[in-house]
Amino acid sequence: MANSTTAAPAQATVANPVKPTLEQIERIYRQPLFDLLEQARGVYLRHWQNHEMQLCSLLSIKTGGCSEDCAYCAQSARYDTGVATEKLMATAEVMDIAQRAKANGATRFCMGAAWRGVREGTHQFEAVLDIVRAVSTLGMEVCVTLGQLTPTAARQLKEAGVTAYNHNLDTSPEFYPNIVTTHSFDDRLQTIRHVQDAGISVCCGGIIGLGESVTDRLRMLEVLATFDPPPESVPINCLMPMPGTPLADQAPLDVFELVRLVAVTRILFPRAKVRLSAGRTRLSREAQALCFFAGANSLFFGNKLLTAENPEVAADRALLAELGYNPKAPLTAGERHDSRRTANPEGGAGHPRS
Ligand code: SAM
Ligand code: DTB
Ligand code: SF4
Image 1 (cartoon, rainbow, N blue to C red):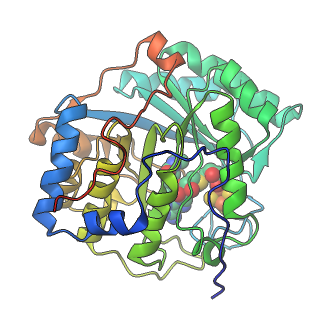
Image 2 (image 1 turned 90 degrees about the vertical axis):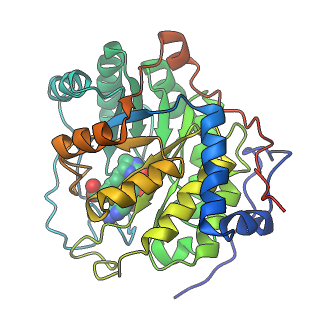
C-alpha cells in the first residue's frame, strides 16, 4: 500500500498554542488502562453534567452513487455494495422524519449526503438549503455532512441554520492515501477551514479498524488538536465492514483499543461532545458502558445510521436507563447560534501524570 507524507496541518487551522505533541499523546494513551480511565473520567466530570447523553438522529438525505473511493464506504459508486442510489429527499419528507426524531428525544439532527462535495448556485445545493431552513425551525442542532464545501457554500449553510458540519479526518495524514485516493487529507483540512471561517461548529473525528496503527489514530488526534477553535464534537466510528467494499473482510477491533482512544479524546478535548458513532451494534452493553465511562457523551439514536444498522431504539433506551443517563437537554437558541465555543480550558494536552 502506498505511504505518503502529507503536509503539516494547513495554516487556517491556526496552531493551538498548547498543542500536544504526538509523544505526549502516546504517553497518555499507553498508561495502565485504569489510570487512563481515571484521568479521562476526571476531565469529564469537571466539564460535563454527569449522566447526560446527547442523542443525535442521523438521516441519509441522498444515498449512494458517490464518485469518491473511500475504502470503507458502502455509498461509493466504485464498489458493488448493494446500496441503491437514491436522489435527494424532498423537504417535506425530511421534515416529517426530523419531527419524529425530536419527539423521540433527539436534540441534534444530522443529515448526510453521498457527494464528493457541494457548491453554491446548483439546484441540488439550493434544495439542501431549503431542507436546512425547514429543519432549523424545529429547535434541534442541525448538522450536515455533504463532502467538500466552498467558502460561499459554507456561509450559505450557516445563514440557512446549520449549527455544525461533519467532515472527518478519518485517520492520520500518512495513512489517508491507503483509504482514499480521489481526494486528499489536505482537501479535508481546506473544507474544515471554510466551515470554521463561516462560523459553523466543526464535527470532526475518524474511523478506527481500517488496518491503521495505533500511532495513526493518535496522529489523527494530534492534527485535530491543532484546530482553533477545537472541534465541537469528535465522532469515533468503528469500521462497519460493508460487503463489496475493499475493507469488507477487515477483522474487528480489540475493544480496549476503542476505549483507550475514547479516553484520550476526552482528555484532549474536554468540552467536545465525544460521539460513540458507527459500530455500536458490534459492542456489548458492557463495552459501551466502558466507552461512556471513558468520556463518550453522545451517540446516534435510531435503528439506522446512513446505510448500516444501529442498535434498536428500545435497546438504547434500556441501556441508558440501566446506566442512569438522562438525554441531554436541547441547546437554547443563543447557544445554537454560537455553538463553536469549545475552548480547551485545561490547556489542551491533558498531559499524563508522571
Ligand atoms: N460524503 C461525506 C464525507 O465524506 O464527509 C459524508 C458522509 S460519510 C458516510 C461520513 C463518515 O461516516 C465518514 O467520514 C466515516 O467516518 C463514516 N463512515 C462511513 N462509512 C463507514 C463505515 N462503513 N464504518 C464506519 N464509519 C463509516
Ligand atoms: C460520522 O462520523 N458517522 C456517521 C455521521 N458522521 C455521518 C456516519 C456513520 C456511517 C456508518 C456507515 C453507514 O451507515 O453506511
Ligand atoms: Fe462518498 Fe463520503 Fe462515502 Fe467517501 S465517505 S464515498 S465521500 S459518501
